[in-house]
Length: 127
Image 1: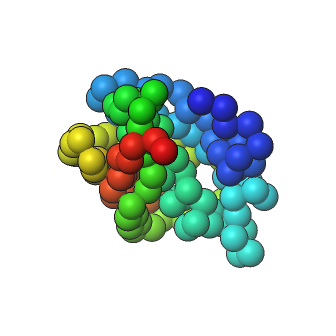
Image 2: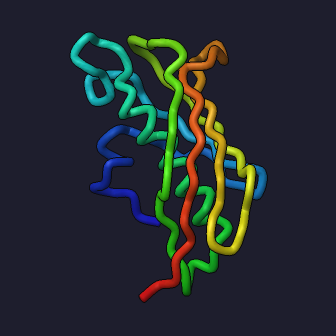
């Protein structure tokens, strides 16, 4: 999957691991991901969460005949962060033929919870 010139590359998101058990990715907390008060933008956390769910869903689909897209996402922003790196751990809660549900935990370098998200992915046939 080519992520060049996408939101993923613009935010500095790096996918570290993709397995049947889940996805691990990182994102810097810097001027690309800050909101005006100098802390991690909630939208950046949501973008990271949906990216993890999307990459995870892509792992499970028939990549020749199917695509996956976000259907619904929610996020609870637990703690602010000014700098450094956050790590997202996405785990599949449900892997079905037409939908998947992913739970994504975003933590700081000390494993403190920054954001907790759930994302539902739709699996569609390629046109």
